[in-house]
Amino acid sequence: MSPTLFLQRLRNRLPDFWPAVAVWVFFAVLMGALGGDWSLGNLALLLVLCSTLASFWLSASVSVAVSAVAVAGFNWYAVPPRFTFHVDLHQDLLLLLTLLCTSSVISVLTARLRSHAMVQALAAEQARQQQTWVTQLQQASGVPAQMGVAQRLLSDWTGCSVSVLLVGSSQEGNVCFGPDGQTGSLSTLEPMLVACMQEQSAIGPGTGRYDHLPVRVLPLRAGVRVIGALALVPEPTRVRDDQPSLAALQSLTRLLADEIERQQSRQQAQQAQDHLQAQQLRNTLLAAISHDYRTPLATMTGAASFIGAQAAQLQDPRIAQHAQTILDEAGHLHRITSNTLQLARLDALDAPLQCSWESVEELVGVVLAAGRRRYPDRVLQTEVPAGLPLLWCEPIMLVQLLENLVDNAIHYSPQQAGVTLQARAQVGVIELAVMDRGAGIPAPWREKVFDPFCRMQGSGRPDPGQDATARRGMGLGLALCRAIARAHQARLWIEPREGGGTVVRLHMPIRLQPTDQPQELAE
Image (cartoon, rainbow, N blue to C red; front, side, top):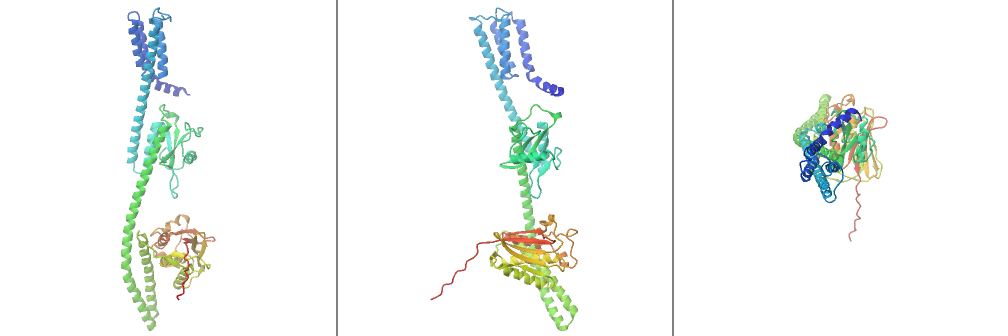
């Protein structure tokens, strides 16, 4: 131990017993001044009084030992014959024994009372600190602010620097908070924090587990779930003698974990409420707009069809071309309107599906026929083996899902590249896949493109020059596909295709197949 640290600890401990020394010095002075004038009974009462007062600042064992020394000195100085340890068995032995027992009992009881008072004061201080924690943590505006408050309070209380590792979601990952409150890597501390979370108990000095570690690490336990870990790194320049116990630290870490989880729950609930309100408003507006689109679209389509027929009779190619353009644009708006209405319907909580048993071959055939009719110059291929199980689905919605995927594959792939629609049976599911040879989708965007009104453009996925329809989309096609898949309890995701391109896979669950009932012949 360094001399500076020794002197610091000595200064901290001197006030604990210095009043007791002063009391016994005062007793010795009175004994020397009044030993010849006062009776033994008065001097004995004075010794008991001094022993009682001194025991307020001494431990029980030290107080009993000092009382025994004081009784021996009392015998040597005050009991005749003076300045000897000779004791008269008939007169003075009982007095000395009674004096020793009384002083010892009073010292032990007083020391216990003082210890109990210190325990109560410590409990009150911990309760006050916990109340301070609760107040400041509840006033924090978010989890980072809570971590700053917790690190500051723990650092002031323990004299250690505090680092924290919180478990995040699969998208966010774990979040590290260094001693300065900044997020980032904790380098050497992070393995110990991860080990503490895996052990789900405190590790380090004084914990009985991995005592050789240089720091003490405690888990942040909210109920039965560990949401992170907290490391206390000692700082030599901030040594404290009144180090909190392991139980007190664990109590405060549980309180911190509860407040963090409560804050996260409040934020998630608020985000869910905001998302629900925005979704309801969006669906209301989209449904109203889509319904208002249908009547003028039907009128435009009918008028364009009439003009096209008249142009064919008049043999005017320019009028026929303009009429076909109107029909194509009206068809594009009709598909956007249908996607919007379907998305608004699927977002509603009370939207039942009109399901029936459907053949995979027939569904793929409908999609293939529609695709070849709309894109006669593109190569569309199918790979559908015979004997696939029937699907329990709403056929119109499933066909719309596959048509949207085929449209995307055609729009975002070169003109000469083919698009393949594949179906195959796997364990418990039927996989439907749409494969293209386009530019592909980077990994960070493979989930984002399923969000409504989210369209990827730019260097990551350049717009194909030959297809203007892809540039005019609203970003509802894949969002509708994900909603249809979710309504059918199916899984839809995107992955890269070997050799270049994109594969969109749909896993439809295989349900218990219907059985054919034989018809009884009527007699």
